[in-house]
Length: 157
Image 1: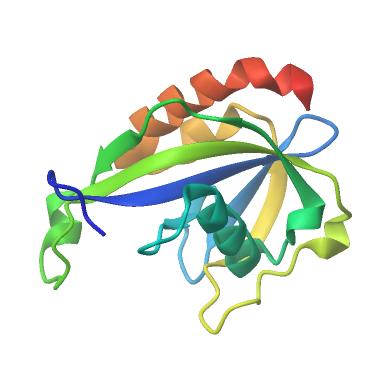
Image 2 (image 1 turned 90 degrees about the vertical axis):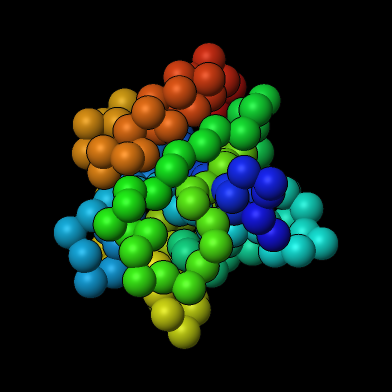
């Protein structure tokens, strides 16, 4: 499901705990950290994709989170040319709807090994704005814009 501009629809989840910290995860076998995110399957709603990806990547069930806010627009990033070479895929980047999720469960609810190929192998709680300084360069602008858009809703967490 790629749009006419070559962007693959995707969801990104900012999970916030009671202390206002966000779930920040380390990609498996890499020295790179990011928020949970994933593609939207054909015929799948954006919200259904959020809960499927949440389960696959973090082990969290619907009962462990509440949707607080969603970005109004799609936020796009283009993959660097080095990542586009030697690939069979036709998409040039991702377009994302970002979700701010209130974490209502217990930390024991997290399970990074819920899929055959886990996305993450470590995680931590961190301050809300910290990820912008740590994310790979090609995602920085999207992180900044989306997190700025979601920030006013933090008062509802």
